[in-house]
Image (cartoon, rainbow over all chains, first blue to last red; front, side, top):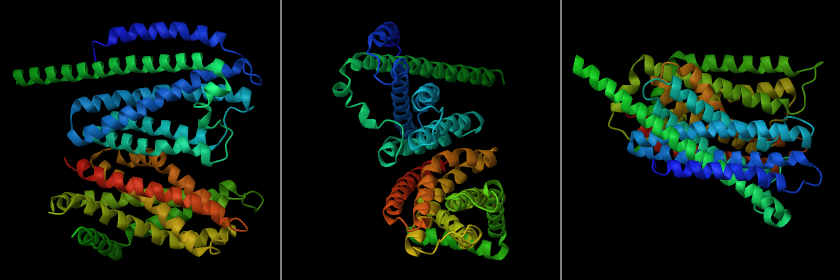
Amino acid sequence: MKKAFIPLLIATAVVFAAAPVLIAQAPLESTMGLVQKIFYFHVPSWIAMYAGIAICAVASILYLATSRPAADRVAAAAAELVVLFGLVGLVTGPLWARKAWGVWWQWDARLTIALLLWLIFVAYLVVRKYGGPGAEKLAAAVGLFGTAVSPFVYVSVNIWRTVHPLTSVMPSLPKSAPAMVPPMAASAVAFLFLFAVLLIARIELGRQQAAVDELYLAREDGAA
Amino acid sequence: MFFRIALLVLRKDFAIEVKSREILTMTLLFAVSCVLVFAFALVKEGEAPPDAAPAILWIAIMFSGTLALGRTFERERYGETLRALLLAPAPRPALYVGKLLGVVSLLGVAELVLVPLVAFFFGAPFFVKPLLMLLMLVAGTVGFAAVGTLFAAMLMRVRTRDVLLPILLYPITVPVIIAGVRGTAALLATPADETTATMWLAIVLAFDVVFITLSLWTFEVLMTE
């Protein structure tokens, strides 16, 4: 994974350089105009957040099943990124909503539960930080339950009347607005690459922290 | 064997509670204060906003449930009895089920008081569709208590458990509460909207299944030191 880091970093830089050009060339949406371009940041950040949730869930299950510290480090890194990308989504959403709907926030299903999901992963980090010894297992359970709630967010828009666009907007994009597909794809790839780069860096940092802790312990044992 | 152990755990908690009535009294009083506080906050010129009744009912259940969960496990911690339970040659999931049944029945008793109280204060027709309403309450309470029992048990070893329990529990169980409030509101509408209520009930039941399955699986792992 460490070997992939540098090529991935370069790839991320290239896509990030290309994405703004593509976004600038994308056609203006007929009713919302320029504001609609938040789309290219808003949706990819949620995609990255869901990627983080998926990774956190798998790593949490692995950790609960095998107690391997490496799995725990992956879960923790993914959870931090969930909070980070979720924050990007939660900031870009209201900015767009203010122009499109006239309000910053609307208490509808999608928004409420996205906020909720984000809060679960904030709670995950809080448990890790203040939970004391054994908090890793506790956090893994929180991650697992958080993931169990997440499909509800996805389907909530379809069963609940809402102002938020339905999830079917994304699969139908090539038909409804083919010119928006390249910039959207570039943004999504850019965010996912950025996600991967940050994830690898964070896991490596966690590994080194654990190694340093071990060295300290070994030294203390030797001195005693 | 499995259910016998679960019932034994339930009987033990029941016997203690019948003698002291500590948790039940506190939970009930707390629930009633919750209803009052929300009534003060929401009622304007003697009129409660529409749909206030189901929201207040579920908030009261949620808050007093948190209190009951905390107290139930505090008792085990204080008496160092959870270790004895865990040492017993019994399947761990059975202990969880026993504890869950205890919390659910405690909250059930609290709801026996709460529902008529909310109906009385807000003039809500809680008894028009008694069967669906009962199912809604049971399903919602089980969903909330399923996660709550697991997390309260896990948090016993953590120093900051009193604060962490609501922080962890509320975001995870809010979908159940939302569905409970929506479903109850649909049943309280005149005329009662059974289709909508059944849909929300189905969602709550789905959450119940997911939460209980996950809890049964993780309880064993999480309670091992």
